[in-house]
Structures are given as structure tokens and as C-alpha cells.
Image 1 (tube, helix red, strand yellow):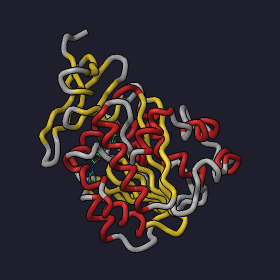
Image 2 (cartoon, protein in one colour):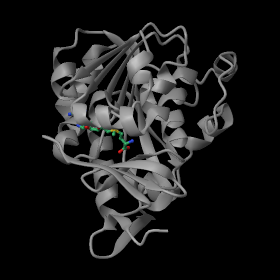
Image 3 (spheres, protein in one colour):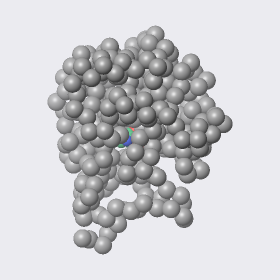
Image 4 (cartoon, protein in one colour):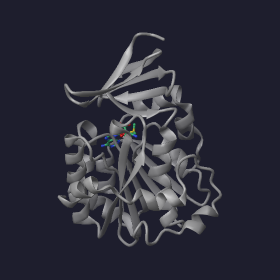
Length: 286
Ligand code: SAM
């Protein structure tokens, strides 16, 4: 074992999470962020941006199951999908598993992330090279949504970094208003919604929720266990014009897709929206 460690600061000067670095595969200062790819014996290849873990080979299935499948279980008829961010390709890979989906537009601001993941994370990124329905645009998701036609999409998945750096604009009311306009009458928005334990993350969760609630009539939050994210538990937002994610879930229709998933199932779908009291308190202040 090398004595080299990658540390992610969860609370500056107080809490950090470490992964032993067996190999440094790639480091690059892109025009948007500091990109690095390492290998760890337990979590495999992992990619970081500005010092924050984005994806690891070992636990990415959890995040990518939970960003994608809950929306398809609520509206199995989704055909047109927009992914914002998601440069590692994992979200696009899960969306592409639905043969009835006709269009997958993906807007990733940093081409270097796509290239590094195609080279070092083929398990998530190979879909970016071989999926005919995928239209990969290297650009700013904020601008793209602003220019998107009304009602262009059934589902928007915001697989972004945290609300700092290039991802900051993806946590604003105007961005959510543009997503609302670009979504069809039964459209669904899923967004990376931070976590509720450490103060800074809870503040970001609260801010995002208060903005989404201003725009969407239905705005819920659901959680999932992911070992390499701060506190091992992270959340997505589920916003919709029409569907309640629990009351309207079409479990048997989703099961007919016959997808094999390692984390998501329709029981955990319902459970994920049941929140601990401290999380409810954070969201109630929104
Ligand atoms: N799973 C990760 C997480 O939860 O933090 C996110 C995965 S993905 C690597 C996040 C991507 O969002 C990055 O590749 C980043 O370049 C991209 N991104 C950040 N801001 C963006 C923007 N304004 N438009 C498009 N992509 C953006």
C-alpha cells in the first residue's frame, strides 16, 4: 500500500475523509476546475473535482440508480431527457437502459471531465461514445436551459457539482424557472440536493429547496446511502408539475422494464422519501 492519501475536507480544519492513493492516474487544471483521477484498492478508480469526490467505480451504482430510476418509476412514459453536468457518463448510462426513451441531450461544461472519464472510467463513460440517442454538448447548462424551447423535455436531471464554481448557477431561481418552462406539462426535475448533516451542506440544501419550492408545485427530497460522500448519506430533489413521487409511483409498470439494479427497487423508492426529523427540520426552514 502506498503511503499517499487523498483527503476530502467535509468540515474545514475539523473533519476529513481519506482514500489511500495506489496510483495517480491524471491531474489537470481545466478552464473550470481542478480535475484528478486516482486509484484506491477498495473503491477502484475515483475522480475528484476541486478536491471533492465525484464518482468512484465501487459506489457509483448507488448515485446513478437513484438519480435516474425514481423519475422513470413515477412516469414510465418519459421519452425526452436532458442531463445537465454528469460528465462521468453514469447518469446517461442509466437513462440509456430504457429502450423507449427517444432523446438524451447532455450538457457538460467541461470537456476535460468527459475525456478523462472516457479514458479512466469506461464503466460509466463508454455510453458517451456509443449511444446513438445521446447528444453530448460541451457547454453551460445554465445557458442551454435558458435557450431550450418550452416543453422540450419530460425529465431534466441536474447531475452537477456543488453550488460553487461552475455549478453555482445551477442552484438559482432563474435556472429552476427555465427548467420549469423547458419541461412538459407532466415534467419532472431531479437535482443534486446536497446533504443535511454538516452545517454548510445543510445550508446549501435549504437554499436549493427554498428556491425549487418557489417554482414547482411539488418539491420533495429523497435520500440514499453512498459511502464516499460526506456522512455517507446524500439527497436528490424531486420536483414536478403534476406527480407526487410516492403517491403516483407506478411500481408494477416500472418492474415491467425488467431492469437489474444493484441499489434501486420500488420499495426503496418509497423509503427514500421518508426523511429523518433533523432533515425535515432543515427543509422546513426553507
Ligand atoms: N455525482 C457528482 C456529484 O454528486 O457531485 C456529480 C457528477 S459530474 C462529475 C458533475 C459535473 O457537473 C462536472 O463534470 C462539472 O463539470 C459539471 N458542471 C458543473 N457546472 C456545470 C454547468 N453550469 N453546466 C454544465 N455542467 C456543469
